[in-house]
Structures are given as structure tokens and as C-alpha cells.
Length: 162
Image (cartoon, rainbow, N blue to C red; front, side):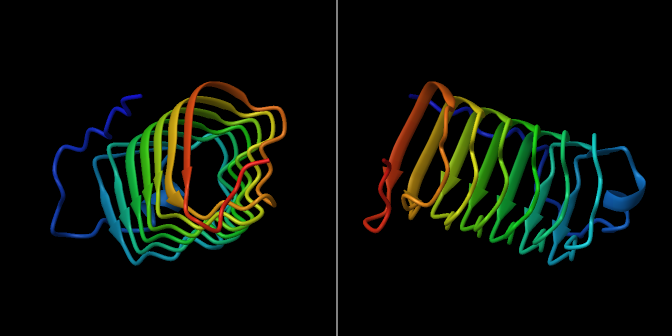
């Protein structure tokens, strides 16, 4: 199963203004570093070609948003609400996903690497070409009735899938 990598223009040395996430409807080709989006409450946001490094999304609400060609590195999504989002060519590397709500999402060409996802909710999501590599996603992660056309689960030792 080949996962298509996110297509970023290039990694910018400068960090974009985090206010863009609260103000703009569409965010494209930006890099955000160590930004605090914990109080962000947005729906129908469109994010394309962006890199987020060390950002805090804990408790944020981004329901029904679209993410395409995005990389999240070392970000905290604890208890974030991504209900009904569409994610295409997205990579989560070394992220904290504890309690993250991915219910009813469309996940297409997604790579989760070394992410912690206790109590993450993927109920009724569509997983198409998705890989969980080195992720301790224990039985408490909710994969109730997902539609999986191509998903690979290579959990870390402590993780298991029931």
C-alpha cells in the first residue's frame, strides 16, 4: 500500500502569522511553528499545502474542515474535534492524538507515524489508503464501523486492535 506524500511547495524559514487560522477561510502554502490554536473554534476551514510544527490544537474545534497536502509534526491534538473533516495527503508525525475526535471523517492517503492516540475516535470514518506506523493505539481507540478500503495497522508494541 503506497501512501501519497503531502505536496508542499517548500519549507519556509519564516513562521506564518497564527491569526490567519482565526481570520481566513482558506489557508495555503504556510508554515506555522509553536503556535497555540487551543481555543480555535472553526468549521469549514480549508487548509492546503501547510506545515505545522510544535503547534497546540488541544481542545480545538475544526469540524467539517478540509486539509489537503498538510504535515503536522510534534503537534498536540488532545481532545480536538475533527468531526466530519476531509483529510487528503496528510501526515501526522510524533503527534499526540489522545481523545481526538476523527468520527465521520474521510481519510485518504494519510500517514500516522509514532503518534499517541489513546481514546481517539474513528467511528464511522472512511479510511482509504491510511497507515498507522509505530503508533501505540490501544484497544481504547474507537474504530467502530469504519469503512476501510485500504488501511494498514502497524502499531507499536503496546497497541492492539480488537
